[in-house]
Length: 136
Ligand code: HEM
Image 1 (cartoon, rainbow, N blue to C red):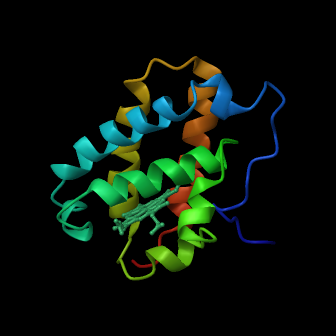
Image 2: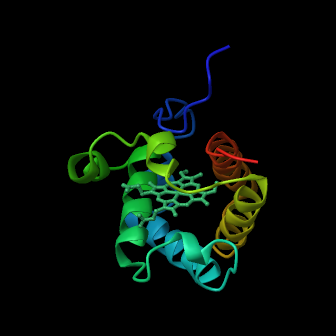
């Protein structure tokens, strides 16, 4: 069985391109902003991230924009995502993935998405987070 890759760009655009449907870049910027508010106070996750979260926010927002069908600025600025490789320096066990997903779910839930859209977004994030577990 081929391993799930969080990098593969979504091709299932049966209800229109999610990037456009969800409100373009401002949606993803708001999502990431809320997510990092949670990370900033998380005793397990905070130590993994740099002191200044500005670039971390920018990279995650650009990645999600690209993944969900928006401009490919992420790739231009950062190159191929290679998320497994980029996360290799950090010890990510099930507890870290749970914490990451908890903050993402809270962030998503603050944005008032339609139920089917929320489901689609969270399903991806859940699979991606589990695929990045590299220890424990
Ligand atoms: C499973 C729990 C996860 C943990 C603990 C985690 C942690 C981290 C850390 C510590 C960084 C480095 C921050 C920096 O260099 O500024 C990072 C970068 C990043 N993470 Fe995660 N991450 C997780 C899951 C995910 C998931 C599920 C995605 C995608 C859906 C993701 C996307 C990214 C991106 C795009 C970057 C920036 C890569 C770059 O340098 O261009 N992460 N993550």
